[in-house]
Image 1 (cartoon, rainbow, N blue to C red):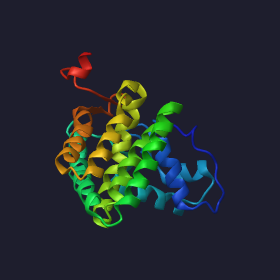
Image 2: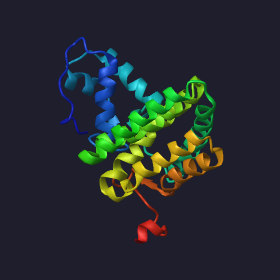
Image 3: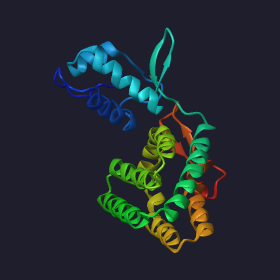
Image 4: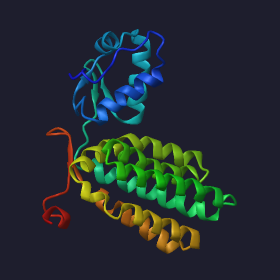
Length: 237
């Protein structure tokens, strides 16, 4: 198990901070899919008690980044070939509903201001070229979209898919930077459709934004990468 990226912490470190560190280590591949994480090893490496580590690991179980097998231990999740399209199918439904709801809210001007800011941050991250920041900023744009719908249940459903989405995107963007071409322009067009109140165009653009995502295949048990199927047009380009 790779512990090199995990730094020692103070004894009073909150579980939230430990969860953040473990999440980052999973997303950057330091803990690859299928790796077993143990409370005792992590607590020793982080220089903390096992209680906060246990709570942090439970948070990541709830997020879908870890899973626990009774009497065996806790492992980094491995997504099967059917999981990736299923994740994005669910997100498409959630975000399509959220976008339509944002368009009809009394405070939609405030919502568009927040979305514009999130898009500007994504543009900056793409310009900087750090794929970790790009993944975070891209997902944040979608999270803001759902949040501005004003539905806690929609937001809760989105959060359950958020970490799994990051796991897929992190590997793909690092190896396929061409995926980012036109991304900001596409999101600008989505916001323009929402501002016009054009529901049909809005839903079409939501669908379009997930077309590539649903075509990806996750090979976590092979090399922690997300790839396009060999038969896809983009894979042949």
